[in-house]
Length: 291
Image 1 (cartoon, rainbow, N blue to C red):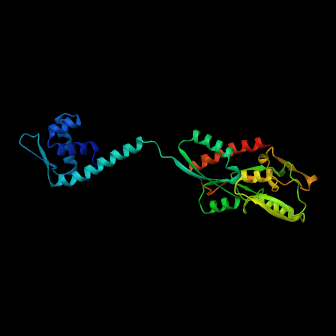
Image 2 (image 1 turned 90 degrees about the horizontal axis):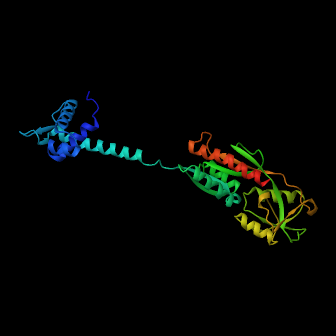
């Protein structure tokens, strides 16, 4: 069997052919002519064929037919070797992790959290998409995101981490609450807050109407502040322009929901695990500050 071909021997062989002889090849390679000649002899011994025809001086050379055949392979081997070396010198390409977050969590707090992670882990790139609970669960099941922060009922399914979320009934500071139908400022269907509001009012036998609907937290906050309707929001969404509604206003203390960190796959890639560990630590601190 033909032994593996040494790259240095192939490099000398290509140099002799390209330079048209041993003397100029040795100058290109910064080697002595005797060293280049010795490497060619080793290559010919390994190939079991004469690869070069030499002139009478011994300094000029042309490839034989087997040498022509080897020449093409030698160029490809050396080019691939150079490509590998370049790839190893280049910085590692960032690993992308797809993260889903609640729509009302995709504001300043999230930007601060993700900016901190980007500084600490430049080898990981986060692609973030926001949406509501039902949409995030669909994206997880479809494999469209690797991780998701989902607002849900307590204990609803498996998770990597959970944090309780305190909810408040909120109205405008000077708003008067209509007895019936109760005007609501809500998020789209699929949001747990919307479902909780409607369920609570219907349990009380109170009629309601959607006075304002918005995809984003700021829209609902503004609608509540202006008196368009009431809403059920997380405690940290309360603004100075809002007031909290209590049992004296006819609204019982709402049960907490939970913010859960959920993974798309049980076996997570190292980059996904790094993001999950980071969120487990940092989101917990954010939730604690809300209390």
